[in-house]
Image (cartoon, rainbow, N blue to C red; front, side, top):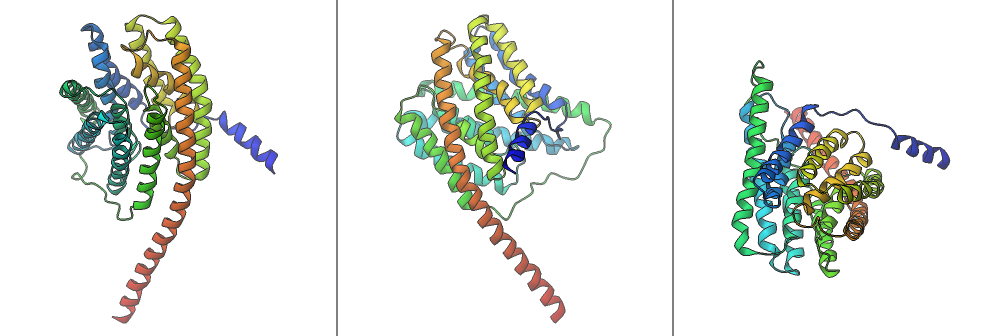
Length: 362
């Protein structure tokens, strides 16, 4: 039985799933991430443009709707959430001991809010990711307004791309109903607390070991915690480690042989498109390209002169630590979900029984 199970797992590793997403999304993401980079290149300031490029990832929250007003309202809400997350990270990066506590509390609150409003995948991932990347940067108060401004431009650029795309796509289609947010009355507070603890531990480990860019640890941990059950969480952890190792090889090749900033920008855009094509089809395969893209976004314009061997060793260490924390947190998360779902189903059953009893009595 175990041999057959192992064979099934190995065979499934080489299978691409069908994607529920529109084929347009990867190219929209590439455009939203790439345009700020290209502007930065032509104005000789790619380093500043990286913040706007990261902000362009908000376009991945584009809802599947025919109502342009609904699409744009949700995009603006998500953009505002991304900006708040980025501001939070910049502000609380001033102290290496306060930052982990603040980030843990922030992550728990964001996770709870996103679950309450039932925001579809990628859910809370990019909000927490933006805060973790900002909180891991050196604290320079005088530069915070400029960074926020550039980041905001990136979200507005993504919203503009989204508006043009929606107008072109829906010009012949009738509008749907008015905008609504689907409230989820069954939100698990303990689950949010577990996410917050994992994020706190991730940043704290990075601070204790004085890693240069500790945000890779919480990002890796959070990516693993996106699994829907214990099997999925551990599988994502394993896939992330395998994909990361291969992806670091791709990143090493790019850092070693691609020196022109324009070609690095093109590499980032291309990798972003590939990642969005694969992320719903095969997680490990997507991580192979996600890893070099993330490293290029983080290091371009500031650390390209570093030794690629040292740089990638540090990234591997941080991603392995984050994946391990994510797997441990996933075990607690899965057991809490079982308990919470059992209680939720009991409550639903009681409500149904009480309603049926009242009908019979009347």
